[in-house]
Image (cartoon, rainbow, N blue to C red; front, top):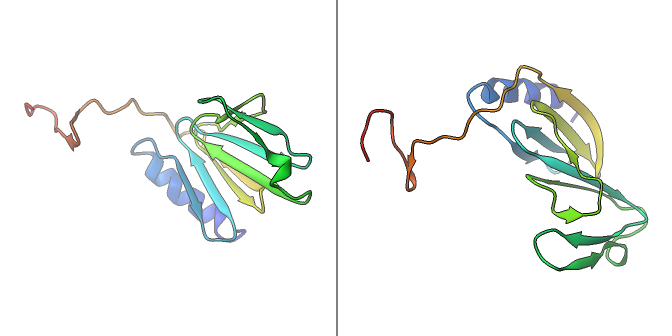
Length: 132
């Protein structure tokens, strides 16, 4: 990851100039995450909490299914649980995680959030000036 992180961030900066570009990418050793628009993360370590999902009335005892040495990072568009310290990514932020721990961070301050595309008709994109 030490060799790849800066190269991936540079490629990401070029792509993100053309539109919103969030992603999670892994090579099996590291997890790379980038946020153009709305991305959140949560790091968990022992002692693991009981997690309460935000979209349904379900609780999970994470201590029962994780070992004391486990470290976990959860990344999602919006927080998935309540009562846990979810952190929002900054626009243009690229992070690298290894074994559930953040090991690298880069923020491109020139990344911007693009407005949602309004030219979609059903599942097809409609160029400007063309009627549906």
